[in-house]
Length: 284
Image (cartoon, rainbow, N blue to C red; front, top):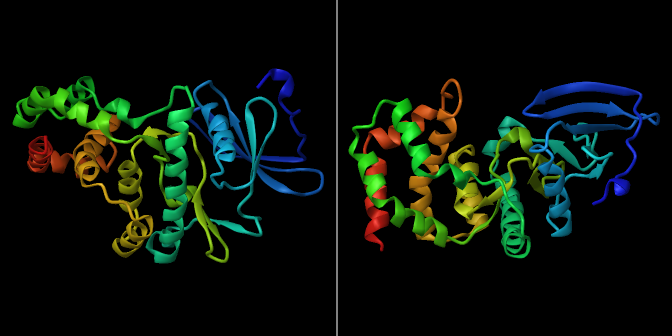
């Protein structure tokens, strides 16, 4: 898209900052007619990828909330507080089987179209799989002072074989950022979808399925899985191992460890991940 093709930025009579984080500023704005919308301003090159993601979802027919370009580095989004069709997700939605079922259909569509994107588009994608490497594993061991655990030696010895199994998994576009604060629910409960696509990127389906179900209640998670109807035991097993490792690798890159790190660490310290690794390698 050339610079000349970008629409001229709109003028607003009100502009209230909601948040600014990681190079993205979010405002609630009103125009002269009193229409309220959400304005996202992307302040660095990395954050600009979200505009491309919205464009691709439109091209490939994956449903989103209403949006339009506003200048070169801004998006105008439907304000879900005022939308006649959508509302913002709420914490209680994580316990809803109906919403989980509708959300599963959106994720399945994203993944189906995402397979086409991966095959048809030549571009570099953000990917959480990039955290799965020997350097990241070493960083986890050093941060936890656990270098002597047998698990790390086993991972070094078998990393190439495991990496090969990961590469053979069918890749798609994954959302990667599930939580109710990024959830849009139809007011009549006929649909549900995710918005905010900055972390959308290359992965495999179980990465998203695990990400969603880890936040849903048990019954909502079961409803999600039943509606999605995905069976791939090999992918499930690989994700059981590398999912926690990727999460820990992302965590140790921060100045202080997030609270959820301990849950993932227990899977390693308890010996569970060693058992999963052995099961994966036995399947060769």
